Image (cartoon, rainbow, N blue to C red):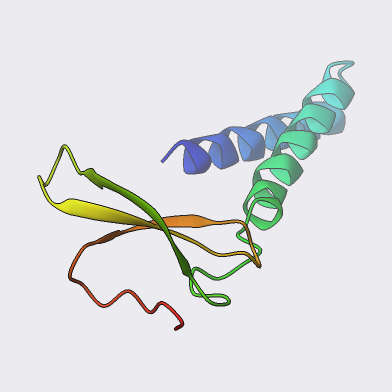
Length: 100
């Protein structure tokens, strides 16, 4: 939702800058510049901050840590992937996909 609002605002800024430029007003350059900067930043943000590793990359190892999830009340086990450094939490008794 916020992303769409920012994209809309960036398009409005850019459009206002282009409109001012056609009328020869001095505010054209800042409006167009900031609109384009915001537009590029919002579009590049999704590409830049994507996950580099899939959740199931490599073998998962048990860490021996266990805790009770406060929301579900289920016993959870902590697993670690040495290849990515990622940790995941799996309910005890579910298929965990741990390599032997």
